[in-house]
Image (cartoon, rainbow, N blue to C red):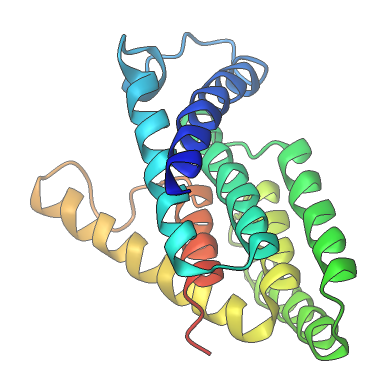
Amino acid sequence: MIFVYVLLGLVIGYGCMQISKKLIMARTTESVKSILLIEKYAFIFWSLFTAALFSIIYFIDSNIVHQIEYMLVFVICLMISAVDLITKKIPNILLLVLLILKFIFLVINYSTAELIQSLWGFGAACIIFALPSLLKLKVGAGDIKLAVITGFYLGLNGFLQTMTIMAIAISVFGIIIKIKKLGNFKTKTAMGPYLAFGFICTLLIPLF
């Protein structure tokens, strides 16, 4: 059975790369020079990475509905990361798909407690990401929208876990570029990939 998930991951991974290319080209006039998109064997990375994650999902949860949800969320997060990393913009269409997925799975697995958690997560994200604006700190509109959707999708506890993972990932990045003398802790970086990473980690392995 896992062979089906691996095969599905290989095919969908390649498709994600092609969609990401189109989304990136629609948002920048500069030539795309990312090794993960133009390298001759880039599709191998996308396909194998997606197949590996689909395999992990297969073992993490035996519920087919949950598996489908996790796989869909993963590919959306993967494309968000790729596009934001290169263009510093998060496509609204991907955010909309993520929001629609949440509503669909809320209906399928309806729970009043989960809905309340989603609303709490939504509220927390709105408050937390409103603070930078009040302090006149610049945060991308796409990052704010992704954070709010993350809060709504994962609930309050999930949102806090995601923020923690994101903070750790960004800190590790800062340490690495400082050690390699490629920048410092003030070096700007796209927030989307880190937020998406925290999102999928929390969805697959919730700690609360």
